[in-house]
Image (cartoon, rainbow, N blue to C red; front, side, top):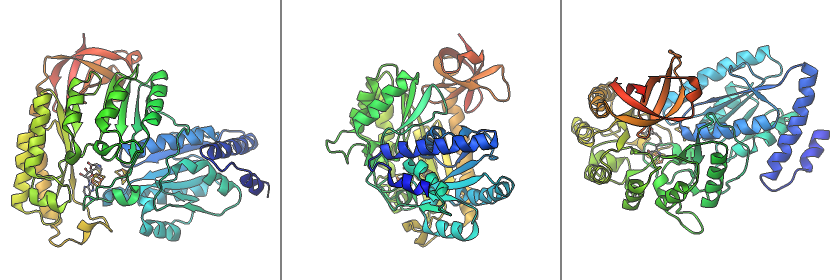
Length: 475
Ligand code: SAH
Ligand code: SF4
Ligand code: F3S
């Protein structure tokens, strides 16, 4: 077969090999489009965190280079689900929707369905897909997203179903195309994977070992983004505070931040996520002195109980966490702190939960993401004794939410009457005469203005606090 021969001719090195397949596919799709009298379309549905969102931008970049055009609905010729499995409900949501894709496929003979992302790294998920969702054409994992064009080409070459899932990888393939959801802000991976093995968490199993990108590659990407008009970057990693440890010439995250700060054209720098155990005084100092690093820190506490934190393998105590918050606030009194909290972790007693409430009262979070503990097969916590009944976890969850909303209204309201610089992100969906902008500290403000301001920095007076956002006016 012609397609077989073309595969044999593919260059071995990356990313050349992938550009070769993108080009083959583009020519193939062009011919198919001419026959059909329309363009071939793609749709990506992204579940989960910012890492997945970033991966989806890369996947979109590859698909566009291969000649597909974006389609908002799932009625597309190539539909890709980039999945998440951090909690059971993320997982359930995906299964329901794959069934729906099967119906769509029966109406469009051109349609191809692909699944990728964290869920696909779990052997029991793959087994279920192979058995119960036979209409799925391509399945791949988190380690080989860069080879999407090659995987599609294998399908084109006649393979019935392409499954390519790796347990892990050392490889970081640079310089592939990438799309951007926004033209003024972008996420930038600085590292992949996680080595922390918090006892409840599936991420280290599905994302593999921690690998840092080389600073020169990160900076080249950021410079390119700045040249394209991006003014805000979000540096991404599961634990950015341990950046650089695996590099040939190690570099700390604080040092990397200083280098990013020096990139002309970038005006705001954010990063996610910081693990409290690795947050250094050096980082606090770099943040304090910086003009570009935003005054916002997402610092997941998970629990306020030292006993539970130890069972979670978080490697800090209640006191460590509070002392860290004090150090951060002493250096930057105007910083906005946000966090993640789990209720109902195995062994959590009422007393442990009261410790969580105590930290919430003392830390002064602007907002928090709260989660009911979800058992993930294969993690140490899944087999721990003393699993907390769901009703108890829920009741604690509700009490926590009540306290948090009271606290965050107090925290957020502090800025009433002040004028601040905001980056205008979009026109308000419900009320098109309003724009939505984001403050450096990550708070949102809605204010009247023209759509042409999207992507610009403007000064806005924060007139009225509505709990977790402001109503303002441009000054
Ligand atoms: N790397 C980040 C978190 C990634 S997962 C960090 O360490 O902070 C995002 C959040 O999901 C976690 O902070 C945790 O609060 C929550 N989470 C992870 N696994 C969970 C589980 N099994 N049940 C409930 N929440 C979980
Ligand atoms: Fe999961 Fe912990 Fe790694 Fe975060 S640091 S991804 S919670 S194992
Ligand atoms: Fe989900 Fe994977 Fe992110 S499990 S939270 S998409 S790293």
